[in-house]
Image (cartoon, rainbow, N blue to C red):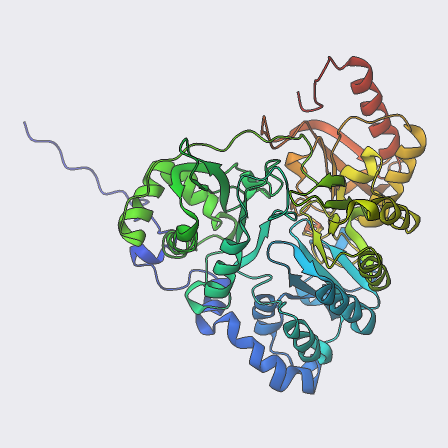
Length: 549
Ligand code: SF4
């Protein structure tokens, strides 16, 4: 019997590609891809130096302003006075201010005092004293004028810093343990690998047109402070049974919409091979990543569809040309907290001193003060953490007490409350064009309220405040994740507030917080709500139980 021919289906369409270059889809399928094809983002640097900084804001080509500027860490900031209700309904140009946010990458997080002072001077000379430490070891300035950018670059580059690929569809800052190389507990020091990748590939056009951003973490920190589970690629320090040290490689972690935890490839990477495995994974992403829809363009979607096994096979066969040996998974994090806040021994007999500015917000003057305090106590180095905190390195034992006293006197707390220590906030409506609500100031007030109401609360409790549904301050992995939105208060008015997510964590039992249906709080009610949650947890917890459990 012959099979009857299938009737022609008028609605049957050829499956549309995902815009994967490796499968022949080289033609741009959306505006962003078109802009990137028209001109590489890295080429905008020369136009900024030669044209825009000389002729001013109005001379900037819109495709550069809203696209390629990001390749050098520049975003227009939000025009003041536009409330969060207008965020989604106005055109991007209506939200654009004539000033910029400028992001400086600090790969690995460590800074010499000279570098810190250059950042402090730029803050005071060009950024109205602003400087935010981000949760990826960047520093962000605000109020930057286009005319100042070449001079800022010159100052940064004179001390080995840059803004190259700090934003955009590029390999972003490579985060590392702030106390790498000195921590008494670390498995392996990842700084050489970070430097190697930075020197070889940052600013290289081979990787300047990725489907979207590409975030890297490299660390051998025993507390796993770089949150490797939520990076696009992560190298995590491991030790083989014979004592050989190297890295376990993870791919495809990320938050925002459709949060996913990274997957282990199960491969052991020796220190000298890290840069080529990194380049191999970045190349898989560049060539096979989905470019049709921007919200599906992160590497996590490819990893999700392929699985770790296929991803590793393609990496090895098509890009590395050799098979990686299998390797062990990293040990579970030791030490509980990942933030390096407090006083801890280094392996050389000195100490490091971690402290907590308020939700990452510092100023040019404060950065100078930190440099002066460090220098007075014999230290020459500081570091930014991935929790919006800072650390002074290499402090001799007899200097610790006086340093702690000076930091605390400047409200840079070395022994902060849980709330100061573990509250993070994204940029929010003050500067961010996507924001719906204000974040930094309200998080700061929240800390004060909770410290006054719950002076004896000492359990770990992370509170992450975000100004919109994006997850720049990691809503989904906080004990209490707050997603900014407009909510209706008791009198029927639309006011700033939050959708609440509960019980997220990374580390020993990683998992995303649950969005509790209908659970929202106005910004004004938030302290009451968190106080209630904290008191309930405190009274009902069993021995050793964490909030997420
Ligand atoms: Fe802006 Fe939203 Fe990111 Fe906050 S979470 S910095 S409001 S995009």
